[in-house]
Image 1 (cartoon, rainbow, N blue to C red):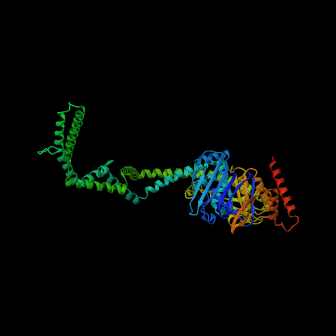
Image 2 (image 1 turned 90 degrees about the vertical axis):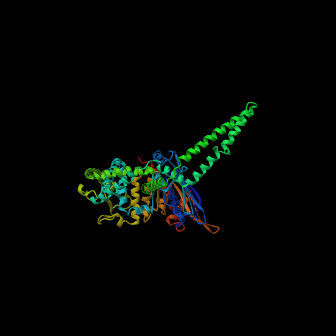
Image 3 (image 1 turned 135 degrees about the vertical axis):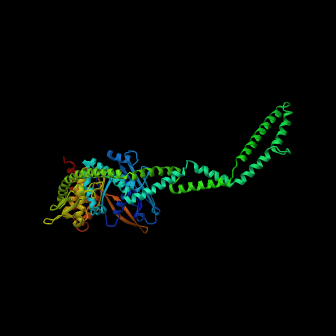
Amino acid sequence: MLKRLHIKNVALISELELEFGERLNILSGETGAGKSIIVDSLMLLLGAKYDKTLLRYGAEFGYVEGVFEVSESQKSKMLESGLDDDDTLIVNRKFFDSGKNDIRVNGKTFTASMLKNLMSSFVDIYGQNEYQSLSRASEHLRILDYFVASENAEIFEELKSKYAKYIGIKSQLRELGNNSEREKTIDILRYQIEEIQNAHIKAGEEAEISEKRKLFSFGEKIAQSLSDAANALSEDDRDTSASSRISVAVGALSDISDIKPIFAELYERLNSVAIEVDDIAETIVNEIEDLNFDEREIDKIERRYDTILSLKRKYGPYDKMMTFLGEAREKLDRLENCSEIYEKLCAMREDAVRDLFDLSTELSKKRRNCAEWLSNSIMKELSELGMENSRFEVIFDELPKIEECEDMISSSGFDRPEFYLSPNVGQPLKPLIKIISGGEMSRFMLALKVITSRTDDIGTLIFDEIDTGISGKVGQIVAQKLAGIAQGHQVLCVTHLAQIAAMADTHFYINKEIQNGETYTDVKLLNENAMIEEISRLSGSKGISTQAIDNATEMKNWSNSFKVNYRQKP
């Protein structure tokens, strides 16, 4: 349930905070006052795409925050979304004139798609977009399956799993290809496998070769430097080497080392240096002897390096190259033995199609049974909503035979049901999407919501312009339906009808004000007397009839009595 809504810098709204009641919340006001702005703000909290035109002119950023009370059934959805199962859900969305926006849910960063997935369990909205969705026959299947899945969830899961397996089999068959394509693929795979195998590349070889290439590129400099170092350290005929001079010093200190402790210490230290210098000199000489800058060896290293780089460009570094080699061997084995594999896959596809056909047929029967129930339920609701002469049916195509079903089956079976309606006596059933009017669509959507609200656990329902194309007695019945839904759900309803406004448990009035040359949308929570004033205005009699307030009071009192009696029903 939505407890609080905070809006800042959205269209004409500078800043406002609304606290909603737990039953029927009505939003009314003059046309253009900004009722749609509040709905648009709510849509942002549900994961809708951010449109920069929503940002108030001159503002650098806008902000919408919603605080929701969480039911026990909704906590599992929070856990699925990576949240803790808290009793409160806080959704905030900050957006900028650059088009960027930041979404946080209980402090965690969310994407718009993640938010939409989460909030589908918290809020259901019925507006112009939802009406338009009924113009797609695919939406009719989704609506029907909402009711079917409540008692048959396992068949939907099994069908999805079987269909995924079937798609995998088809993919493998497609991979085998025809004979010509298969031979081409075999030739390519053989060449790639031989190319990698014949190279005999080892792990770490590239680094080793690179080190040798580096050594060769500095060959002359290395040889000269090692030679100079050896000459400087090693003894020579003139006794000018570092080793010779250190030996002289060691001998000199040896003669006096027993006279004073410091002389002994200096002797030991210098003797260690002499030993270390001799070892370094010997190591340098060994390195000189190991140097090999043979041109043939250099050419060999370069050719090896080029081979490694060439294969690396084609197949990636060593690890990826070995992975590719393994996969290529497996694929080649499948293709070379494709006759047996092909026959096996064909048999698997036949089994998969048979399983899908059986499941889809079973699901179709459940859908047809549910469709009959749904048709009767909708006609009952439509009758109460002033369309008592309407006929409604969910029309299905004939069930296909197994040999013709493969191209029809999807992860949801092979049904393509469509809603048909006859709104008047003597008229044949026709596709709903082609004949339904705006007022009829409003009532049809409300009928659907009345039916779904009996079983769903969504906390908040939003009705935007549910009163389109209706008035009078039908408007009164719509008001009663909304009040009934609000006994088990929080309802937010934008309306222009006095009959609906009279049913409000909580009523907000939205109006525009001009301050200092700027236009602002303001929202006021109405008390009982103010509600009656607004009902009078919506009825069109305010300022015309002297009994306008009396009539509005009577309407409000009747509505309050209706709700009390409704709650007391067994």
